[in-house]
Structures are given as structure tokens and as C-alpha cells.
Image 1: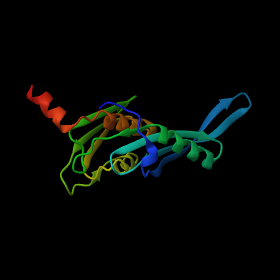
Image 2 (image 1 turned 180 degrees about the vertical axis):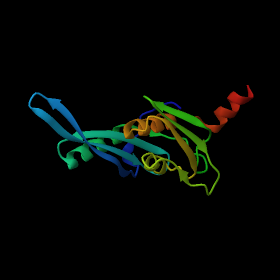
Image 3 (image 1 turned 60 degrees about the vertical axis):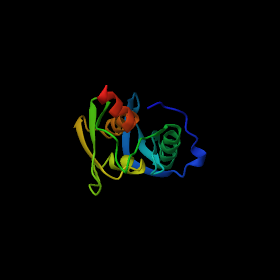
Image 4 (image 1 turned 90 degrees about the vertical axis):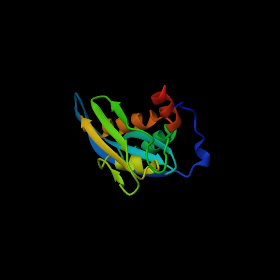
Length: 161
């Protein structure tokens, strides 16, 4: 799928905070603590974005994460509430296998990636996370997998040729 710039002014985006964690940097005088927030935005109609924000205060980190997510919006190919084909998303040491599911299955996924799939408008999907299970890597692997989805016609054309 070609990544084109999406005008977010026409979208009604919902926001979800997926993870809040405390991170530290060791310096000569001790440790500096910050909060890292992972946010997901989506319109439940095929548009999704993820963002990461770090700050000393929770509200600042959340604001930064949501702003970052709004800058990274992609269009996801959703067919009848599921994905058009099986795909393996990879990021760093994490892999997320995503398979289309029949109506009524629901979103069967890790608790960290479930909001990402739901905000994309995917209602039925089977997922399996493989490798590293860190929050950031799982979310980015899922995002990369969704970015790599093709249209059903393209998949059929490739299979028939």
C-alpha cells in the first residue's frame, strides 16, 4: 500500500493511551526519571496512528504522544471488519502474526495491541505475538504489519499469476 499524506482535519479521531511507564537515565549526579507514554489514535474506519511521548510530567508526555500519533496516521485496508489477508508484522525482535477472522470472532489479541486494532476499525482478527513482548516493539510491529496490507484484488492477482 502506498503511504500518502492523510488530511486529519476531516477525520473524527479517538485517542487511547496504551502504555505509561517510568524510564530513567543514569547521569553523574544520580538518575533522571521521565514518563514514557504510548498513544494510539484512530477513527474506527481504516485510519490509525501511533505516537510516543516522554516528559517529566504525565500530562506533557501524554500530549506529546498524541501529537506524535496524529503526525503518523496511515490508512489501513479493512474488508468487512477484518484484514484482507494474513500478514506478519516485524519490528526489532518482535513479530506479530495477523490472520483474517470470520464474523463474530472478535479481536483476539494481546492487551497492548488490541486498542490499535479496534481504533483501526478491525472487528474480527486473530493475532499471535512472537519474539520480544515489549510494549513499544509489539505496537510498532503491529503498525508495520497493518501498513503492509494490500487490497484483496492485488493479492488475488499475485496468486493467479
